[in-house]
Length: 244
Image 1: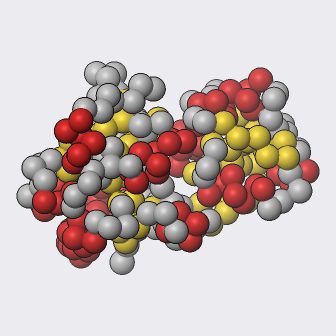
Image 2 (image 1 turned 60 degrees about the horizontal axis):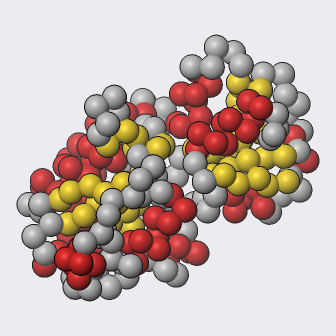
């Protein structure tokens, strides 16, 4: 996936508070449906695209989207190449040492293992397990007896299971369930779901307190009026944890 070219103006943009600028740039990966993906019209789509647009509209901010590969998505935020991350990113202590997060807009979602149909579930603990690199799932597998194999993109993790390079993949349940449903019985869920992390939030630079608080207030508003829950059900179904 190609990164957008940066101009000198864009580089200068990152040196000041994002909210003081005419445009707030929203970074996403575009490769993790239904959170974010590129649709048939070659446009960013998904839950986070729709939510991000709603947040910007309610905050009366002029926002534009920037697509960036997952492995460099945090460094490019810190460097000022965009102002937020909305990319299915779990809130973790390790990430909070580098960037700040808004409150979560998705509660912790069960992560799930998936393998080829008929795979012995014991591979979860002793086999070869693949994840997308630099994810909360990768950190979990690294703490088990399984052999961790990381790939830059979600599609590569699924391909590794299909080719036999890995015994199982661990990722967010909503992402994997759709793939299992479309596999025609080739893939199946393995083992019990896992709850990892503190939910998914918007990442911002640690210096952008005003921008973070602006989005925090709108997320709170959407939780209170029920519109966030409606959006969650639309994209993930009623099985996804909702906000009280």
